[in-house]
Amino acid sequence: MNPGMTRKAEEAAPEYLVAAFYKFIPLPEFAEMREPLRSLCAAGGVRGTILLAPEGVNGTVAGPRAGVEAALAHLRSFGALADLEHKESFSATIPFARMKVRLKREIMGLGDPGAGQIREVGVYVPAEEWNDLISDPSVLLIDTRNDYEVAVGTFDGAVDPKTQTFRDFPEFVRANLDPERHTKIAMYCTGGIRCEKASAYMIDQGFPEVYHLQGGILKYLETVAPEESRWRGECFVFDERVSVDHTLQPGDLIRCFGCGGAITAEDKLSEKYEEGISCPVCHDGLTEQKRRRATERQRQIELARKREASA
Image 1 (tube, rainbow, N blue to C red):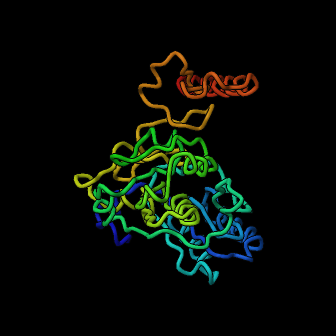
Image 2: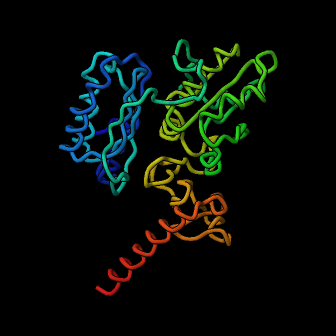
Image 3: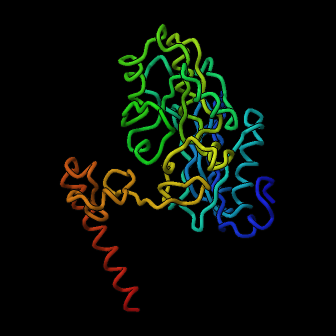
């Protein structure tokens, strides 16, 4: 039984385990790890994405608990990953279409030539200590996620860099932050990987005190009771759940096929919302080719719905 759950809650939990994990660590054998890991996941009914690179591993997978735990045990069999931590949530269905194990130059690209190597990271702040830190008026709180993620939910008082990709983050720092004025910075992201790499970048840029949320938003939601929470909204996730609520259950949002962002109830009222095709964010920028492809996909979905209704 999961030690974080009561027996009653465990029995009532949805069927599939979702595990998110990452670790920055030199991994010279990363390429040789790919095929055995992919085969093991396939055999265990596990789907999702795992990135392997010289700087470490990053992944989110889902499936039967036995299959997910076997994949994690295999990763931990490599000495460098022996202490690999993961965060758990649950889903009634597997929120991934297939299993992908990819070889990359970086597990989290920052778009800055000088930021490719992790030399020193900021101070890890456990979830149970996060509220105290961000209540300090001398702390500048920064959300390191992309704008469409921030729109779904964020912490009270956080700065939104309004980035479209993580590679835009260095430009935000250069244009808006100064090590002499912003002397105490706290950052966070979904699972901890992005803000950890961002913290290393900030230290390289000369910022004296840099903190980041250990385990990210997902660990915070798992640890902090809703009545004590400083989190507002839901947390965007990169799978078919789209978002999770404070109990780490799938939220109420749906994904836009056009841009991959979340669609809210307000978005659905816009004349630029087309089910299965576009949302107000991407409507004007969709290429004609992508619009045709999305339109045909939606047509097939509607035909399937009609067939199911008449069966």
